[in-house]
Amino acid sequence: MTSKIAPCLWYDLGQARKAAEFYMTLGLPDSHIDGVHASPSDNPSSKAGEELVVEFTLAGQAFVGLNGGPQFPHTEAVSFMIQTEDQAETDRLAELLDESARAICDAVKHRLETGQPMEGGHAHYDHPVLFLQHMLWHEGYHVGQIKLALKRMGYVMPEALEEQAIWSLWRTEVW
Image (cartoon, rainbow, N blue to C red; front, side):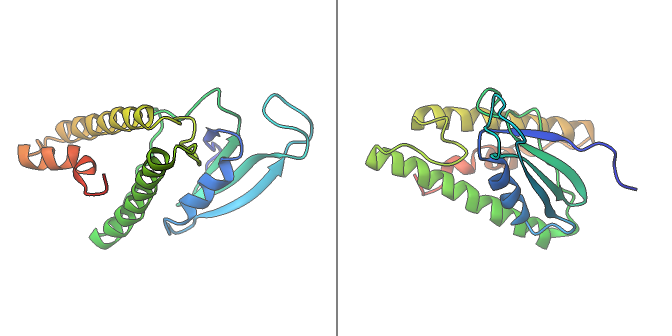
């Protein structure tokens, strides 16, 4: 049965299709872009004819991406949790997400080295310090969610594993 509810994710202008295309690179079954729709008339976030809505399906779940503008940036209020079949699938997805992290590091390094503005979905954090501050807060939030979920299931993460999980991104050689 198809769900009657499709979560609508708000993106900055022009970012909805890019986000949907990124989600498609994860290679999850039953994932596809279903439609791209232009605004029928001028509105606060776009002119008539500009891309307004992107409908996509991710692992069988329908979503709507709205190019709404910078008023409501992404927060940690929504997260995607993917149930993997085996360790190989988990490893494959982890590698794709690592590639994304490397691209972010490259954008920050480029901004620091050249002084040129950052580009892409993270561009509203044009100053690298603001961007890295957001990344630290964002990661800490998700680590807290994971630890709470594990605790509720009766699992306590060993201290060494917790240390590795929390700070692994920040201990890489890319900096």
